[in-house]
Length: 232
Image (tube, rainbow, N blue to C red):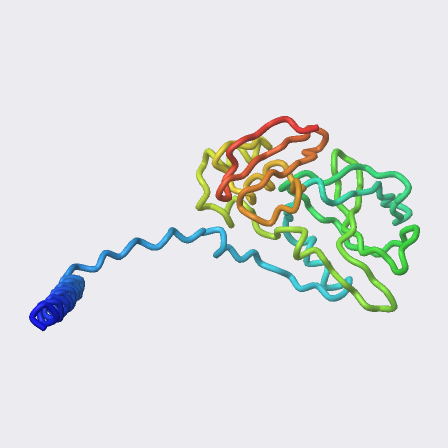
């Protein structure tokens, strides 16, 4: 009986000790100053809101002629020779692809029938190297207009829209060069359309850029370029 009482007392003492230690720990935790980790810096690019025109017919599309425009995504849009006298687009011969951030002065917006197209192409006419050319910015069918120009063109100088980027970054972009540390948007401004290797969809990936015939392969880690190589 005496041993049983000693065992019971020992268990009770152990429980009391553990309980007391837990209470003291909770009090210490409450009194200890709370350490708040700083929130990660917000990406200023997310707050850039380029102006849009919301075009709906040919008359409204003439707004594109009232200021310069800049190509958002280079080497993604094909342009064709345009005959100013006949007001016709030569869809049989491609004149080239618009480079990234190419500054254009749109002269006119017209519609033209393209081979194999169910409707008519809405074409933006501009001059390049002393010649008239045109590229598609939408489609018209049965009097219904669908414009893509707000997704294709800036109507504000990108240097002003993204003025929070460093002068070094903008110098590389203007020279169509990629530097380590650039984010994916900056790389696209420099060398145009990129195609992800594999499934893509994360901040760690490799993109291949045709770059107007000078292909590049750029590897991104945590959203930043870490490796730039010649592509195939």
